[in-house]
Length: 244
Image (cartoon, rainbow, N blue to C red; front, side, top):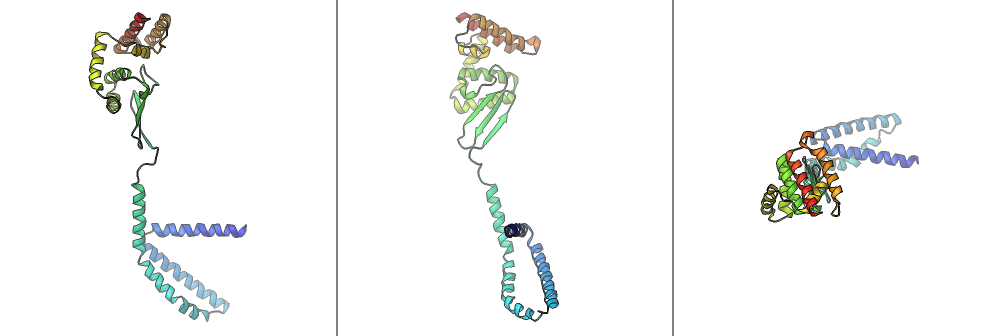
């Protein structure tokens, strides 16, 4: 056990020395090696003198002289080795993002995510009638209605949603103009009306009225809502009651 611990400590010390060698400027490395070598030489001579083995110095000097010369030659390549290490680190920092990485952008109405590998874009609605729904699960009509809300209240959300529509829905701008004309003239699809009130396709007239009351209680202009939202809620109720 003690031998294993000694080996681990030795390996850790070697790792520290290598790390210091790579990160330290060449001049400082050479200066430190000279000092360490001088200290080892002095301590070795003192030890040999104390133990009466001083006559071994000459033999050891002749034996290690070629190695010392090679060591000084290797020190000349220190800047080259440091350059290789620097290029290796630079290459690592310029690698493409890891697989599965995503970017996320959040605005008032949307939290949009972009997958770096596939390029897929999707978003979650954070506010409004469609809160909690994902753009990929919404119809084009509902997306255009959400776009109208964003254009009224938050330009950043509108720009983000327009980018999503450009990617996933062709010719949406022409349909957006028609959608705005229908909204202005007071028309609304049943799907859009159900999405606004949050009711099921088989909802009764009483359920539609109750959903309308709950929304108006929260979003009425007198309670901090807007005239636009109140008008949409009223239009949704009228649309569903006519068809129920």
